Amino acid sequence: MAPADAPGSAGGAAVETTGTLLREGAERLRASGSETSRLDAELLLGHAVGAGRTAILAHPEAPVGADAARRYRAGVERRAAGEPVAYIRGLKEFYGLAFNVDPRALIPRPETERLVELGVAEIRHRLGAARDAAAPVQLLDVGTGSGAVAVAVAVSLRGFGGLDAVRIAAVDVSRDALALARENAVSHAVADRIDFAEADLVPEDGQRYDVILANLPYVRRDVIPQLPRATSFEPVGALDGGPDGLEVIGRLLERLPETLTDDGLALLEIGADLGEAIVTLAGARLPGWRCVVEADLAGLPRVARIARG
Picture 1: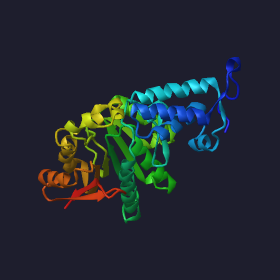
Picture 2 (picture 1 turned 135 degrees about the horizontal axis):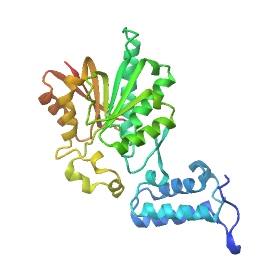
Picture 3 (picture 1 turned 45 degrees about the horizontal axis):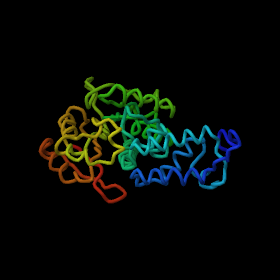
Picture 4 (picture 1 turned 180 degrees about the horizontal axis):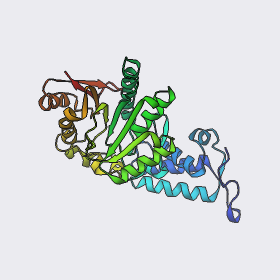
């Protein structure tokens, strides 16, 4: 590994190494209360020197230049103050892709990958079924935020040659989040394949969709103050699901009859504590419809599948 501005040091001072800096940073973060102090330190040092985490770990004796050491220590102090590592680095890995992230939108979570998996599987099923080849599958990503879901789906579709047969729309109520989503779409060369629009839950153009994906706020309002300190740096509007965690999701349920095609499917990410509640709410808001909850890899309720009965 060759850190960007190593070797060398000013005034004959001893050159610092990745190993010593990692120990120093991990100790500082552990003292600040970080539960992932070592991992945080590794990611921040890799970011500071422009190397991957694997290279950092493989070469503890590698020298680190003064500028990189300063960047690293500044990042450690930001993390010690609670700021998420993803915001400090400016990126987050999601579904095998790297996304730009900053306080304009929620940081993509690993559990949301389940939503992408189910969405891609549903689209593949529809593309494989007998259908009018001239009519593309209409997909809507509600509350797109950083654009992680829409972009990950688009990249997956491109991978098996299905992108031309799908029209993707992505909406968010936040203009700032949409700007970030567009940046991520450009980074992954799918900006011309996703129609981004500012809207409260669904576009007002009357379009109906075959598949709707949504990762809307689902944290109960009274729980938000108890969340890890890092979440306080994220937009609260992307977390706050109201008193029961289903306030925003409930509003989307009310829009489904007019927005979903007759044989359409909505896939809504939910909190792990909302499995029974979403079934009850869907039964009340959408009489005669079906609601089945899919589990994530940990076996926890994660995605509600909602369709007409």
